[in-house]
Length: 191
Image 1 (cartoon, one colour):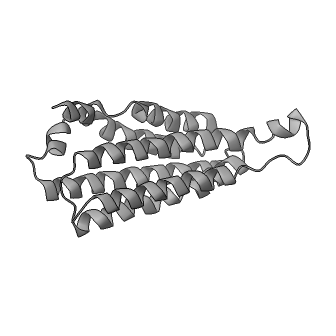
Image 2 (cartoon, one colour):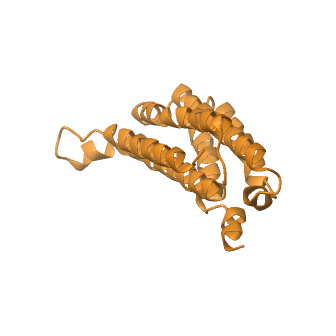
Image 3 (cartoon, helix red, strand yellow):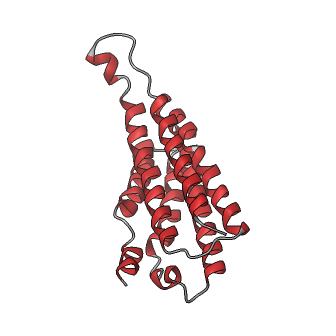
């Protein structure tokens, strides 16, 4: 099975996710900076989610550049990931519209955590199909980012009920960890 169709479909879904998120930002009804300032929580949540979707798109792209074969399990695992990512516009809008209230902030963290788990499932499906000698398998060594991210998400979810700023800080920390493209995979491109 060719991987090009999977990549094209996924790219389209990523583009739609970003489009839906930006459409959730409503222009103020009055022409004042105070009205614009009232949109700040929505805009901040959009920026964070845009970065997250960009990180997933970037890492998805890199992972599939090193993937030689895809099968039905990979297609379903990819759809599983895309499903959770398509919920990001909802959790983003709810979080921003409620000015980072406790429940929406927790739901946002759960959304991010489950998307991260889905990404790992996709990665494992690819590794199973492509083998332990594949370029991707060789590129994936130290998994400190994969191990630290769920811990920070869980901390963010737990703290969201007590302190939204600290909770949001955990989510920002995960984004910062992943903002720089995965050097393991980039090194494999040069090999």
